[in-house]
Image (tube, rainbow, N blue to C red; front, side, top):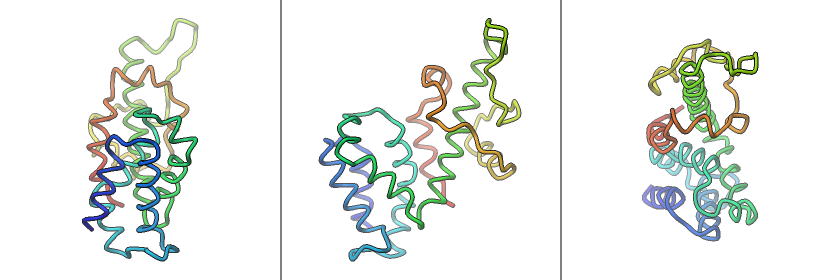
Length: 180
């Protein structure tokens, strides 16, 4: 459990691309059931308690550090593989859904402040949250449980619109507590 916590803290912090890849390799070895060094349920529980799904979501979405080198050296792919491990994927998907709802809500809120019409005769609103703006993770969790609609994926959203309404760092900290 202590080793998992150290690795999660390391992958969340500042690392060179080669260090991040090494950390991801170590995490995958401890969390992948097909690995000879699989740490079992205790390792999975430690990873969840350390907020690994949120850390991975943040790392995969952020442009912190030398993310291009991390993409080239395979660190990003490894982090995505870890997130998709059967014992973590449900929590990772829940974190992703909540994050997307919160980002969509911030976009809607920002559009609402400027009116629905963008001046070009059409609206850019997102109907996934039914016009509701979620002020907390709990409200977003309730939304993900109440509907089967999936929010707009983050890669389809404009980062420029998000900055004013959502602090990704704050949201990341909140999402560390999500367990599925």
